[in-house]
Length: 228
Image 1 (tube, rainbow, N blue to C red):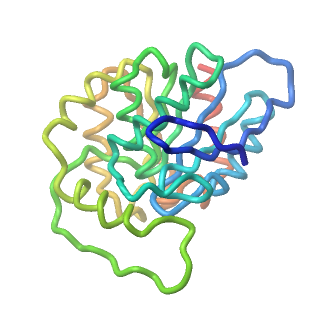
Image 2: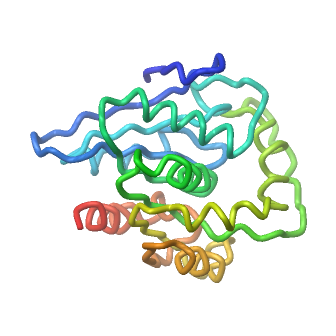
């Protein structure tokens, strides 16, 4: 793992896999969901690295990244945008799952020139929902539990500005829905696709963890979209 200074005293950890061919293609940056780390992308990153360099990232508060104690999708998006500035690339293809997808969406909206194509895994249009704060699991965690305490309310009661952000995403976007087995409302997933200027939907009946449950189908969908 390599740690990158993204400003504000925060360092993000990333796991880089260099493309195994000389084919010239933009790198792929992978953002995991809440409580997960860059290692959650190992299978996907390995397969995509056949033709593209991949950067799997620990979001702030996760894995080997710093745990500054302050967390929000806006702060995480600013971290990732700063990380993209470090890369010697005009633009990247950005993939995000769940919380990582919301972060990726913000980055694509706020820094459109840095994102060539966007993939959002089982992410829906944010809607208010009844709060259901989870209990902290016992033992040592691979992330700062304060992430849940601070970000969950933002997801339960999303700011109206989210609806203004979505139309600002100019990058072609693939939204991969997990289908009926997912706890994410698939109607909200379709709503997000319709609100994106250039959105398309792929449904893989795998539940919320599409990339982990159906890795081959997920990689195939992502690879085809990025090569389109």
